[in-house]
Amino acid sequence: MQQEEKKMKVKKGFLAVQVMGLEDEEEEEEEEGGSPSSSRRFVIPISYLYHPLFKRLLDKAYDVYGYHTDGPLKLPCSVDDFLHLRWRIHKESSPHPHHHTHPLALHFHSC
Image 1 (cartoon, rainbow, N blue to C red):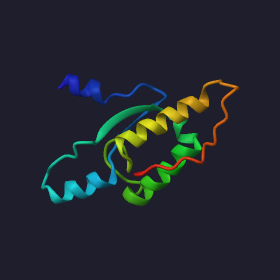
Image 2: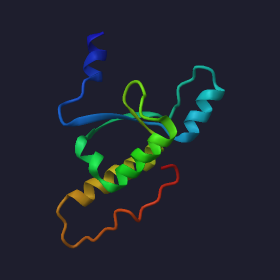
Image 3: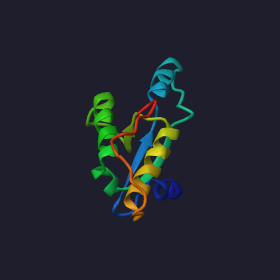
Image 4: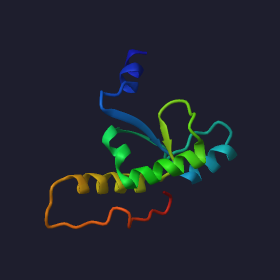
């Protein structure tokens, strides 16, 4: 039990999110009680909440799940797309003067 509590705790300044593609939601409804295989929990810095790409994902999460959900914040996005999103946010926030990115010009298959 203590191991589960440690697993659920998140350090100050971070947020737990559950990445679960929209396809997984449909599969979960079809399979009684089955958990989505590609659903994954991530712990991210709170600063991500202010990034334009992440804000778009939050808007989509609101459309799909609403504001009131139990547990970690659910994100309607594939794990692969979320990993790419996280990479983009990290890349844009690190100082690389020779790289020019367009943060809103990114489109995902599932996000």
